[in-house]
Image 1 (cartoon, rainbow, N blue to C red):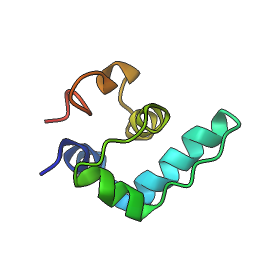
Image 2 (image 1 turned 135 degrees about the horizontal axis):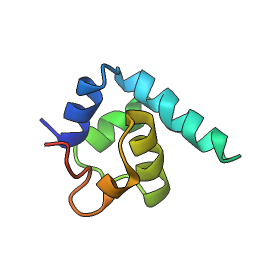
Image 3 (image 1 turned 45 degrees about the vertical axis):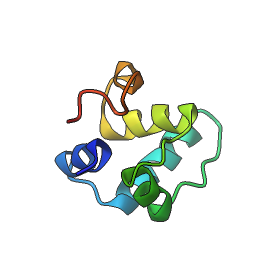
Image 4 (image 1 turned 180 degrees about the vertical axis):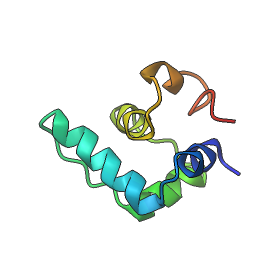
Amino acid sequence: MHPLARARRAAGLSQEQLAAGVRAAAARRGLRSGTDASRVRKWERGIRPDEDSQTYIAEALGLSADNIDGPWPAGCR
């Protein structure tokens, strides 16, 4: 299982809920994110999110931004 899927499940979130959390994290910065469940599935299959999305994902999962360096997301194995 991909570390992101493991972290999402550990947080008790569906793919759609994680996508909504990513959109909310972007909105708190006055930005828009087109993240949906399909995008989350791609990330969980190995497509690496861009740096901004990584920050929003970490926030949505309640992880420190420090966890986005190196193999992503670090500390979620």
